[in-house]
Amino acid sequence: PKLVQSMYFEGNSATWAHQDTYYLDSESLGAMAAGWIALEDIAPGAGRFYIYPGSHRIDVGKNGGDFDIAFNHERYKQLIIDLIAQFKLECRAPALAKGDVLMWNARTIHGSLMTNQPDHSRSSLTVHFIPEHHRFLQFQSRIRRLSVDHYKGLAVHRPKNQDRWQNRAMLKIETTFPGPYRFLRDRAVKLLTR
Image (cartoon, rainbow, N blue to C red; front, top):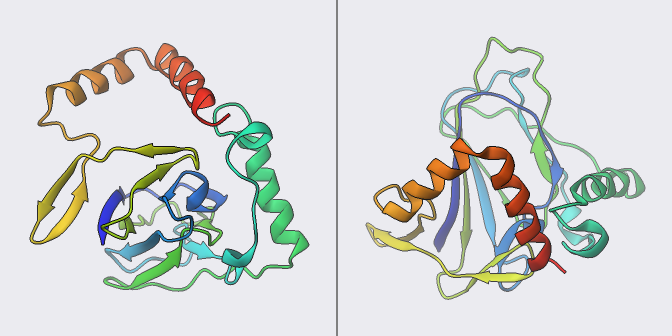
């Protein structure tokens, strides 16, 4: 496999229901696999991770046009809610203990629940892998060149590697001028997802 994205969660904010393939995937849609790794016992009200089993078989609208991420992201989110109701999908939020891993396909609808025990953290990692010989697809419209390093035989994409001056400069711009940065980013994404 090739690791194309990883995220560390300590807090327990809710994540809307979505398919990863809308945002990122292998060039062969659905070939990406993802995993959620519990780094502690996850309390029932700490915003547990959930999936909708069988949802990977539903053909969802493509990122672009009326469902582009730049200006119509809310339409996409509503589409997912409507599909969950239409297909009467069952939400499952398994109890995960430290070290447990839940794996899913890029086309599986998933997210994390609202927190009703804010005094509990949700220390966890999320990872996304594509086959090593596949190219990385972003927003279902753009093959993205990867910045890959190898660690103990595993190819790891490090898009924001702070050892590189360009990435440090971009982070400085992004945090110093968040409004203009988002404005320009959204327009660039719109061009990519036509």
